[in-house]
Image (cartoon, rainbow over all chains, first blue to last red; front, top):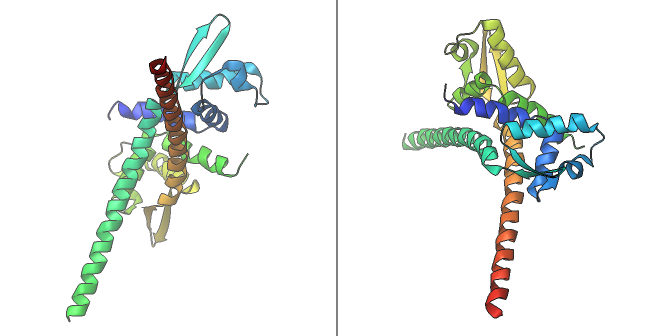
Length: 114
Length: 114
């Protein structure tokens, strides 16, 4: 099984939580500190930072620490891995629908020729 | 929190496993029975059908039973929910890069005018 698969496991696992998705959504509009990110959530800070840790471990965000403040930013390349997987499936699916469509047209053509 | 969120939790959770992703990939090229789907996996059938059950519960596949054979097919609408979420994030991110680009161009323009 390609290495890609383990990355995908972690990325989809990270996306399977509304708090983590909300953090990614917030970071889409710019980088933010731990406290700025935590503010909208009714959650103890240690629980919240576990979500940030998970996002950073799987490579969806990156952070730098300056003094006491850790600032997070989106690392969009890893989200691309998940996007590529989903779009790849859609492409296969659409090709299959096209084949079905072509088949139906051929059958109709055969009917008309009779 | 919108209803959408719970659906997304389940869909991303379902996608976070290589066996379930492989089943979706297989179904992208056409419907298949439980045994056909199980064949490539070195896994006890009850464990494998748990994966199929999870995919069906979250709406990524649908199945019909005819006699003793259950046949599965992809239900691509639910995959669209995950795709929409990811593409939405990318759009925000790209808009942000565009803004940054415009800002850099403005700053360069100001420099040239000096």
